[in-house]
Image (cartoon, rainbow, N blue to C red):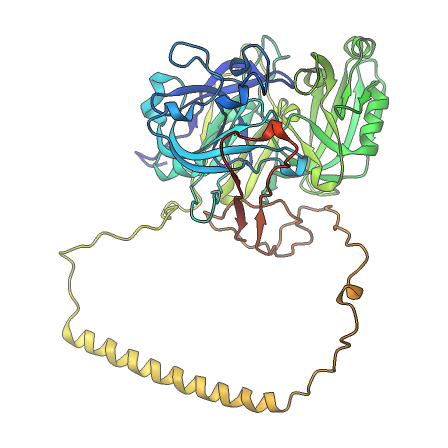
Length: 537
């Protein structure tokens, strides 16, 4: 790396463990002027920073003690803050109210005020080093995202008809804060030693957190892997196969759960003694079952591959302690032990969430469309950080084309050169016109020889030609041969099939409005508009 080139940026860990669905290691950000401080979690497919708004903690919406503090909101102006106070920020420039658009395939909902404001990473001492002016910010009202999110996607989001703000990661590269559109992440593990905090590096990764064996996977528009097999091994030597037919799953840190086919969930529940609680659609762990699991703790072994079957693989071992979670309001009325396992309604919901990431180190290189996955390394005392820079794919390319500055001292063309260029241009135009005339003449003759199409049956209902059901093709492979490379600033896409090397077609995805009956998700005092994300592939 040349002198003066940006180095990887370490996002400061806040030291706080938060969550209403477990205990998660958070990172420190501040937004606005004067700055308001928050503890947030990384979001792989979010584009910007998403913060709980102060209105969402109003007593008529969430009547709980220290609502803001439980959601990672720090004290502001010498008193507890319920959430982001947009009206208290002199740098806030509002766009409007839109849906968040995160985790919609998993049923996550929520509206947000979108606007522009200043963002910084870490504590006040670090403010000037990482501050980004007028970044897109979303202040949301929904319990589905209990703690704020820091988006790590490279894609911008289209807000309304005209706003297309660049992502947090892209802005960092634009301003020379990081070398490339990349990151390395490990979620942290509260059950390891005396709590191992999470690690987040932008523009590189921390090799000390990564095991020697890694699996290189082509990056699609999401971070997708093949889950070829899942087995359980108990400390007494017994074992069982929990999943034998491979599936394709998305690694998504917006959620903590692992979403698998219902039949696989039933097998896991039977093996581990879990109880399905229909009202919450989650697997709870009774005191008796938990005592048995802690006495003879199982390890779940995931065989992860580049596809659902065959190809290169790596095994990820996850101890039961990583799944021994507690959840409270609004998931359960009182704090309860549960296992982060969810029944997927279809293959688009197969997901490996935050619980899985506790034992995984992931480094993502958006510019080369690849990522590395490996078993996370835990040592006591912890190893010193070993930051590795992920270089930009093309060091000469800028993210956003900018016009070259005019140079008054540049040499002018000689008159003969100008005349030569003019003559050549005229000759080229004449040749093109002549070629176009011959082309039109030839096709006009062909059109007269084309037979008329057969008459259509006007009485036939067009619906009769449609199939009764349209089956969605199953995702069984991650091969990406022939896939068009997305533009550096392609917008945030919707997940789609990538089978057999077929080229993916661009499409527009509308983010639908929230259900009117789901009052808990509504933002007071404003009309909810539609935003959309466009896929330019």
